[in-house]
Structures are given as C-alpha cells and as structure tokens.
Image (cartoon, rainbow over all chains, first blue to last red; front, side, top):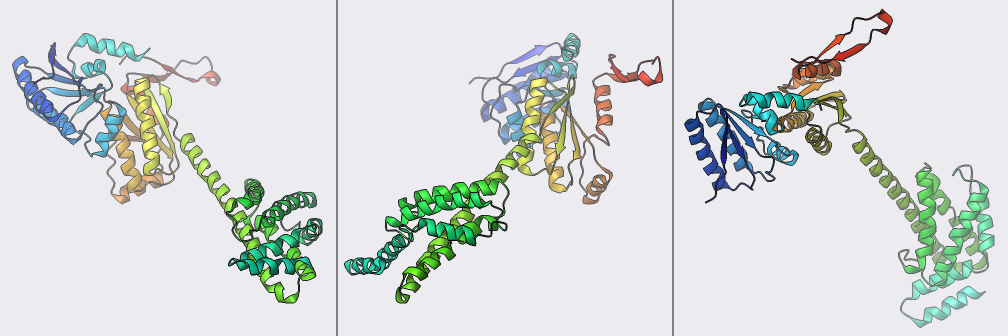
Length: 129
Length: 312
C-alpha cells in the first residue's frame, strides 16, 4: 500500500499531499505522522494541500484530528496552500477547522511554526515584491 | 355584397364551418379597404394619450394592417400562433419591444392595438347584413384582444429581460476586491448579502487572495444596509473560508445602528472588527509590521500622511 512521505526539516515535519486522498491513506498518514512527531521530537507539522482538489468531511476531520494529536504532543500544525474551492467546501460542510493554523503557502507556513528561521526571513522579503 | 355569399359557399362545404366562414368574411373586410381602415384608426387614436406622433401611428398602423390583412387572407382568424401570423407577430413584437425599452406604460402600448377594434367594427356596420354582424363582431373582437394580449406579453417579457440583465450587472459591479497594500486586500460590500451574492463574493475574495498572496483581508460592510442573522452567517462563512486559505479577516464599517442590531440578535461575530476602514487598514499595516507616520512637515499645509515602512 502506498503512503504519503513525511520529510523532516529542522524541527518541523513536512507533509505534501500530492494525490487524491482516500480514507485508508488518510488514516495511515495520521498514524505515521503521530509516530514521526514522537520519533523526531518535532515542534511543528506543516501539511501542504495545494494539490488537493477534492475534500470530504472525512479528510476535513482528519486534518482536525492531526492538529489535535500534534497539540497533545506539543507540536503546532499548519495547513498551507488550500484551494479556494476546497475552502468553500469545508466551510459549507461546517468544518471551519478552528484548532488548525493556516497559511497561504509553505514558506509562510514554515515562518509561522518557526521551523527554519532562515525561511522565516525569506518569507518576509517575498512579501515586498 | 361579396362576403356573405362567399361565406355561404364555404359554409356548406365542410365541418369547419365557423372558422372558414369567419376568416373569409374577415379577409373580405380588409380587401381594398386598408387605407380607409387606417385613416379611421389613426383618427380615432388619441395620440396624446398614448404618446405617439401621428406619423408614427400611421406607419406602425400600416405595418400592422398589412400583416394582418395577409394573415386573414390565408383563412385563419383565430389561432395567432399559426405560420400565417408570423408577420403580425414580428411587427407587434418590434413595436411592443421598442415601446417597453423607451419606457412607455403597458396601457400606452396596448391601447394602440386595441383601438383597431372600432374602425373594424365600423367596416362591419357598413358592409354586413345584421344577421351576420354578431358573428363577425365577436370574431374581430377576439382577434384584436389576442393581438393586444400578445403585445402586452411582449412588453412584459422585454421588461423582465431588462431587469434580469440589470440584476446581473449589479452583481458583477458590486463585488470588487481592492488591493490596499502589499499583502492587504479590501472587499467593500455594497447592498444586501443573500446566499447567491455571498457565493460570488467569497469566490472573488478567495481567488484574489491566491493571486495577490494577501495575508489580510478587510471586509468593509459600510454599504450593507441591514445585517440580520443570515447576513451575519454569510459573513462568518466568508471569514472562515479566508482563514482556511491562510488569510486573516478584519470586518470594518459597522454602523452604530447595525452594531446594536447584531448585539440584540445575539449574533456572536467572533471576528476582529473595526468601526472604519481606516482603522482596519491601520491594524492590518501594524500586523504586517508597518506603521503610518507623519513626516516632519516643512509647513502644516503640505503635511500629508506618508506611509513609511519599518520592519516590525
């Protein structure tokens, strides 16, 4: 069974969802991520969903769950790159993801969880162009 | 007298007695007398009341009469949807449409058509024996009524199209997303927020956030006349969606009356809100690490506010 790769950058974990999520994949990601947070003593989790075009209530709840689990393990979760259609769908489903931090792109997301300090500087510079 | 004889001949021929008889007699009523009918039509028209010039009435009247004479000559005096009446429909449609777009009232439009009754009745009186008069009058009356109804219907349709188009234009006009500063966009909302418009507004805003990479969006509701629970819910949805994309929202332009309404309704907006767009912009600038300061002016007259960027 395929799984979604989890990369470690500094003290943060980076998850990029490139394929359409099905429920099994989502559950597996949740398990893997929880283990990796403990293993690497990660302080932040960054989930890039810019390639995700279809969400349902299950995926929405998975994102919320990951955020809650990470908070228990003392790591911040940032969801980045959500598409407008996806955002509208989630809101219509009543899933505002209240506990989850969000950012427009990965750069700003990293700055938000302070994973790599250099990336934070770069994000600020990028604002002004 | 031609008409009754013709009517009689056709009458004995077939089952479809009434229609054939009517139309034949109607055709004979028009034949060769169009200019008479037109003259008496125009003279009975109260051109002041329906706001037409005499020339207009004459040219329109001639067009209608010509088409009508051709249509009844084909032997159909009742069914306006028939192919024979295509010309009549075209003429009336053009007339009613123009009148509707020019802002005349439905009465002013339909009276023109309906006033054709009287000149036709006069023709009946001149040409028909009294025993056939009733049938003729009733079929003419029916025909003219149908023409009148068609004219009003076209009028109505034209107006409805106009309203629908204007509604669409307003929808497009009233949802611009304005870039106020690098990373700050504003959405001045104007008019009532229903669910249809919220959808458009939301999509516009979210797409602009992606395009400009804005991190703060200001929703200005100065132009929203009334906020009820539904409007508040729509606002919150928009804020929620923007937050999911990674942009913070500030709501500004809440008028005193609306603030009171929101509180009385017990709506929990739970969003950062400011009284004016200026305050919201100041907050947004501060959050992105900028402040607005006055440069030390040479004279008070030239002291303009110049935003200076400082890293926070």
